[in-house]
Length: 204
Image 1 (spheres, rainbow, N blue to C red):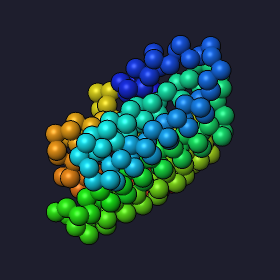
Image 2: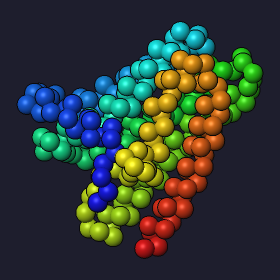
Image 3: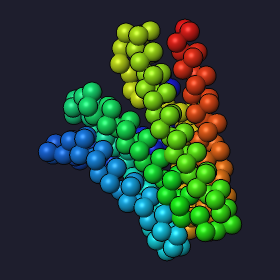
């Protein structure tokens, strides 16, 4: 098995104090959804100061997305509901992010293209959610086990998804617009790659 990414290793350490508390993995997942949607909503306003806060909140939420899984493993409180809730949290968060950034830039240089890119990114996030679930089901049929959520391409302890951590610094530096364009295009490309991956797993 490949080594877990760095953010997951950090989350594994940070979540240990919660192992003996009433806090459940689903509690953590719901909190990440609230933080992510709040952050995305602030990015939709179009105000630079609120955008800075929104980007910070969203990045925090995406890091916390690793906490629920680690807490579940450390306490043995894994569940099918938690598994699907975690998947849904990721898809919903990214869809909201793309859509809200597009709304925030609708009166800028991108004009109507901002909304189009936002919709494309949001749709890709939702489609990728179901594609990855399909990959999981195909792997389960092949291996006879229910694994962790589908991982992303990675190298040296970093995954493709870790690029979302750049959202905060690029927003603070005023580079959110080109980052948004690249991310929306990248989301579409990743969805197409996931289609191919699902087909490959099913053939195997």
